[in-house]
Amino acid sequence: MMTDRTLRTPADLDALDFEKLDGLMPVVAQEADSGVVLMVAFANRDALERSLESGRMHYWSRSRGELWRKGDTSGHVQHVVSLHADCDADTVLAIVRQEGAACHTGEATCFGEGVERHGSVLDRLDAVLAARAAERPEGSYTTKLLADENLRLKKLGEECAELVTALAKGEADRIPEEAADLVYHVLVAARAAGVGLDAITAVLEDRAR
Image (cartoon, rainbow, N blue to C red; front, side):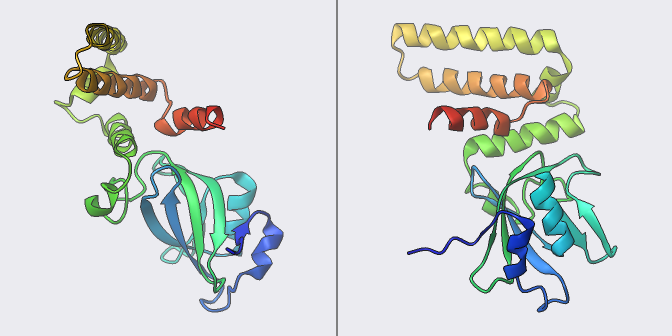
């Protein structure tokens, strides 16, 4: 039988061994939906308490010697889903929903593409869209859509109509492609409105219960 090591309240932090690393503890951040490991950082008790109380991940910067809340500078916020202690009570697994890139380099994960591609394709697409929305690189079709409401809504309507046509005609070879086009344009339109994949999947999770 598995032991439940979920950290639900600040009182649960009493069970952690902060002495091994002079008051600090490694924290592994993992994306809730895809299971992708995003980053490893350190936290002291105060950081973990604030994470539990606020619902946003806090860490301790060893280089700056100060507490920091993920996303305050970059806008790439980590929303806490749950925190879990390991069997030795000296490492914490943070299950989070990540907005944008987790890594300071702008990549979705600190461990590179080899890890990222093991996540769901929708999570990887959403991370790319978040990066495009933040950086707006020239020559990008996504950037063009994000900058022009009329264009993205027009394309959304066109892609919806093309999928309906393929379905009505029973064109099995076209349906996956048209469906993929529609999903892409839906996510771009949602991103332009400030809504990421995490908000959409949260609604789907509620409906799946």
